[in-house]
Image (cartoon, rainbow, N blue to C red; front, side, top):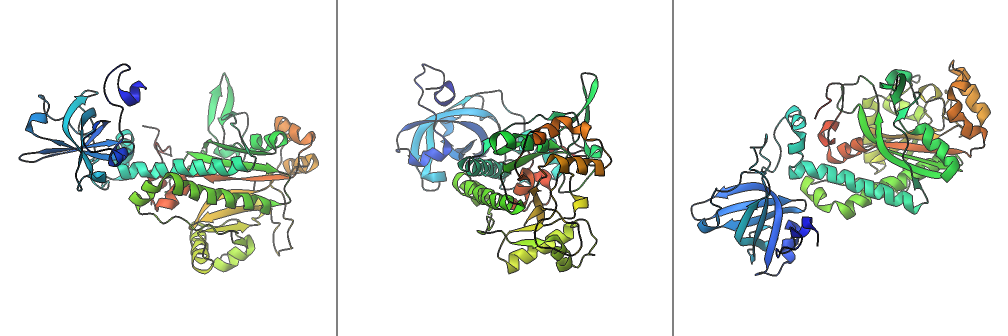
Length: 445
C-alpha cells in the first residue's frame, strides 16, 4: 500500500477510493476520498460538499455535527474525506458519502480566478491562459487534454504494432532544418545554435538504423504568425519509414495512425468525448486523394498558386465531407518550389504544370493537419538539390554521411497534436487546447 493511495504507511485508514469507483462500493462500507473541493452547497439542515479527483465528482453530505470546527474548506482546497458509502439515486453514480470526517491536506485555498464548478468556462481566452495552472482543473477544459493523451496512446500503439521504434532527437541543433529565417537562435557555450524546427534530419538518419521510427516531442518555429492556428512551440508526432515505393506508402501508414488515434480516444477517453459532446472523425479505409493541380481547379484558385490558402482548405474539407463521406483528404503533388530541398520529385502519372513533388498535406475537417512525403535518398541527388539552392553540401556533412553510406527509399510525415485536438473539439483558437501555449506574445505561465 502506497502513501498516496492509502494514507501514511502503517495507518489504519482505508485505501483511497476514486470518485468513479464509488458506484461499485457496497453501501455501508467505509471509504476514503482524496481530491479538491469542487463546490460547497450550504442548505438549512444539510451541506453538500462536491469532491473532485482525477476520475470525476463525488458527493459528500454533512449534517451540522459533521462540519469541521473551522468551517468548511473553501473551493479548490485539497482534502481527504473518510465516511460511509450510502445509496442515493440522486448522487453521482448512485452513491454518496455520509458521516464524513474532513481533513485538510493543505492550507485553505484562495478563491479561484474562475468558477470551476460551473458546467462551462465563460472567461475570455486571455484570462484562461493567464491562470492556466488553475483553469485547466475545470472538467471540460481538462477533457480536451484527455483527448490528446488518448490520441498519443493510439498513435504509439499503431506504430509499435507495425515494427516502429520510438526515438528522441536533439532539440538544440547546429543548423536549420527548413529555413534559417524561422529558427530561434540560442547561445550554446559561446557559439550559435538553434531550437529544432523538427526532428527531420535525425529521423531520416535513423531510418538507416531501425528502418521505421517515430518521435513525440516539441518543435519550435520562429514564425511571426499571430493567428488562431499557429504556435511558436507545439507537439509534433513525427514518423519516418524506409523501403517504400513512393509517398503513397507513407499515406497508408498515416491513415492507419489516424484511425488508431481515434480508436485510442474511444478506448481511453470515452468520458471526455461525452462531456464535450463530440462526434469522432470518419477515417475511411482508404483516404481520398486529389492532386494539387486538381485541388486548385476545384477551388477556383490560379493555376500558379504555390500553396493552398486557408479558405481553399476549408472548401476542400467541405467537399470531402459532403461528397466523399470523409473527414480527411490528402492533397498530393505540391510544387517542388514550395517543399524542402530533401523532397523527392513527382514519379506518378504526368500532370501538366509543375514540377511537382512526391509530397502531400492531409486536411482534417478543412485544416492542414499533417505534412509528409517521399525524401531523396541518393547522395548525388542531395548534392544537386543543395547546390541548386545556393549552398555547399559540405555545410550538411553531418546529415549527408548517412546517405553516403547507403540509405533506402524512405519517407514520413508529421502531425501537429494541438491542431488535431483543436479540430476534434471545434476550438476557435488552438490556444484553447494547448496546456501552456507559446506564441508571438506569450512566454508565461
